[in-house]
Length: 267
Image (cartoon, rainbow, N blue to C red; front, side, top):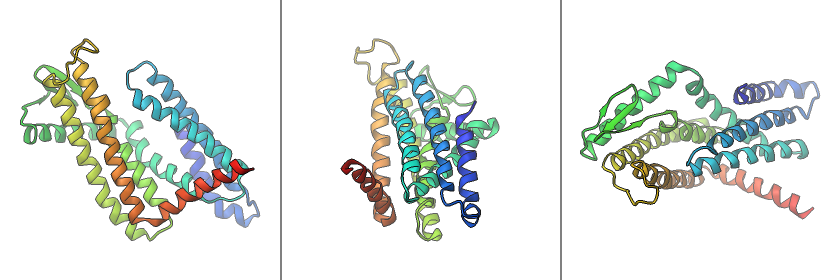
């Protein structure tokens, strides 16, 4: 059972039918979205369990945090009398899921995206890193005999969806939001291509064979799981800062969330 599809369905029903429910006098309709957040939490908890069998400790931590976050939001929606900012956060998640999940669930879309990213990564590898890699399968790039597969997680679709949902959920003019998205999305995409190319370059040239892990995959581990992750977080941090500067509404939403938790702590 795909809990994320259930999450999306519940969120859409709640958001679309909210005004109709209010006209009928159902003023707590939005609280039904808490069910969606519980499903959201279950999905990320299952992802966390899957990551336990890997050495990707960053994603392991992120999926656990997402699961906990989903439960917290569900509780807040149930116990809090005010819809804001929880309704905006639900809209944020809904938009992000609507962008991401077609690429996860529709094979042709996923293959197209991964193939496009693989070809663009190969271009960066050649033009910037001066390395002649080659695509040996649909989305596998070979460099000096070391293959790296471009999977859906290497496409930056999650980051693009994250910022798209964040920006579009804010109470600010649509034109401004669209302009910022048209700038942010290609920046995220191109930054990700450099991330991919660096990991392939480092692995193909065995740059980080420190002898700690003791296999030929050690360079890939340090390049992909450590250096590239730090690079990604820096990009996200910079874009988040710019979002704060461009959209004061984002800062207001964060402050409201913090104040909400402070009120609960003071009780």
